[in-house]
Length: 539
Image (tube, rainbow, N blue to C red):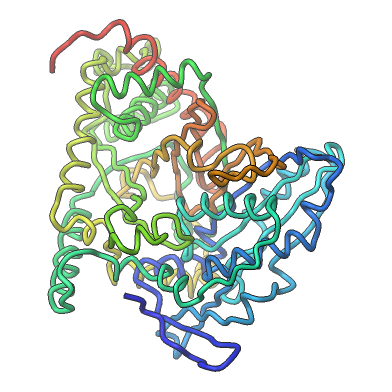
């Protein structure tokens, strides 16, 4: 099943393979000033103040080297041949030693200074490259000597959400454990680091696979061709947006544990998931934002009448690992640091206005319940649920969800190669009516993270070693695409967290915060106490 070939057969050996189509799309993203690069951040406490060697240069270097041998794409480089063929190259000697740019140590005097370093890694000059696909930064806190920030930055073409969690957990486990000198079988590890294209189960015939892949591409393209119209938060969208690297922002909120558990329980009670509800909560939140602007006179009647009729388009990533080759999955592919995602696109009907359908300038702001009743909230959540069911139950699901068209990759390539020369003329504002298709936002719900990222380390099952590290907090920062607005949700320590990543060139921070606050209120109304005690209705 491995697509790797031997490039050099004598020590130090090297191997190569072509990028899969999904990896290729993210490669061209990365050429656009690091678009889609991921940064996993973790605030760690050393539970043994007498042992200051855990974050020493030697121990961190040992840990990173071990991880590269476990997950060889971390030590790979990308090679472009004749401007067309793009390959990963893995050399044994690069896995055995760490380069000068792979590990960095800094001191910071406060949490605020640490956050500034994180923001600079996301929005400053890109330090990753074709020759450096992953790096780790250790920020030692001088104001809290037992606390350290671990920052792991990885190009998206070699990782995804599952891979990022594996990488952080493995890093903390190895860092806090005695050295393990067991040799890694490189060929075996490379057999896990293959493109998802070759892992689709079913008929092994190459001809049959090509036919199924082609049909999946056609179905995916046809579905996407129907995603016209749409609208999103008020934004500054111009003729330069496509070629202007995003400045990525992040805003988050958390629900109390008791509210979080009630929200999850109410989703289960009504036969939906938070992932089904989230697009509806975001839609009604946007509707209330726009109502507020319209009644204040901050929006023209023409734009209001346009927006109220438009559908809501959403999309996001799907973890494909459980649907891929079972042998690969069971041997370690389920958590390997590599890229194995697909994509979904969902659609909701027109803006929910309910009893506020005849809203006029100067009216009072309608409540969430006036815009969308609870039965209608459930109805719209089930629209998303049915669309998800239609996708997941399709016999060619993996081909459809994993499809990244040649035309799409060509577009990413054109932007990645030419963005520096595209913004010399004066930018012109593109009206909201002329931006179609417009995705309201992207997003995903990661579920309960506590089983994936434990709090204490070492965390291996059956390990009787004393716990040396405590994970206080973790998050992932994304280098957004131009005009990206991404709503994520996860549960950590029994608290539901919601985060929004956005392009600060396009969206105002106050508008994003207002939207997230409205999502919070809608969530509490529809999935909090209101859902527990008010609804006894059959749809």
